[in-house]
Image (tube, rainbow, N blue to C red):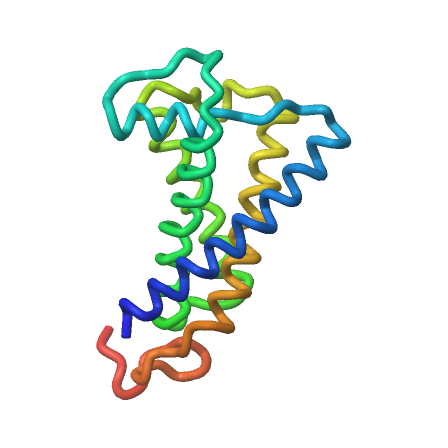
Length: 163
């Protein structure tokens, strides 16, 4: 059951990435912010242990990391949905997980820098796009993933509580 929930969550994550990407392109048309290739440089560093120069622009790796991370983090949201962690609160928490995943990979590989060193616009833009991703992923996961048989509609465990 959890495997199916993770798979459906991955599909929800891909839907979230699609909407997030459309939002990014719309935002870039207004702000003239250039494409970021941090995902590609992060993927290269994780996979090979070597860092690409800041001028590198490998679009295929960029898409693989962008969509792959969305699917992987979406799998978690699918398991949450099956476990009773649903709705806007779960999506808000999921936003923190998505941000933490990106920051951990980017900073552990030396590709990124901590968000508090970014300018305000970049922080707001990143938070907004990741929030869109998580809320779309959550809405799709909550529709695709059935609540586990041992869960009540409010997400609590059926039967006696042990605490």
